Length: 107
Image 1 (cartoon, rainbow, N blue to C red):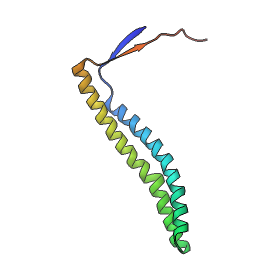
Image 2 (cartoon, one colour):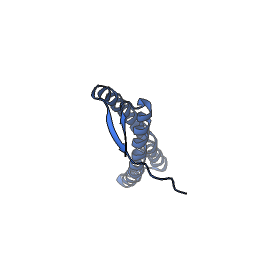
Image 3 (cartoon, rainbow, N blue to C red):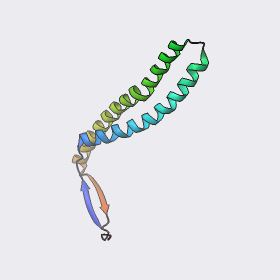
Image 4 (cartoon, helix red, strand yellow):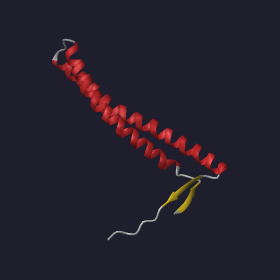
């Protein structure tokens, strides 16, 4: 068993990771919100063709584009902040010790 100590992480890399995870989750939520929003929109009132079409486009754009992009930005900011705090704390405390196990190469 080998042991390594992590004392620093790449701040922007962690930001991209957190942002991408948030984007994927927000996209899944956006798909569900689009379907629910369109059903609610078309059953709630008596809209003409163009009003209904424009409302549907607005709901779809907000749920499938705007929401995931905003969540990516918040995830990126959170990841950068978390990585920065980790770097400061790990530098003072000596880091986080990880234990690794070496396995033989498979053919």
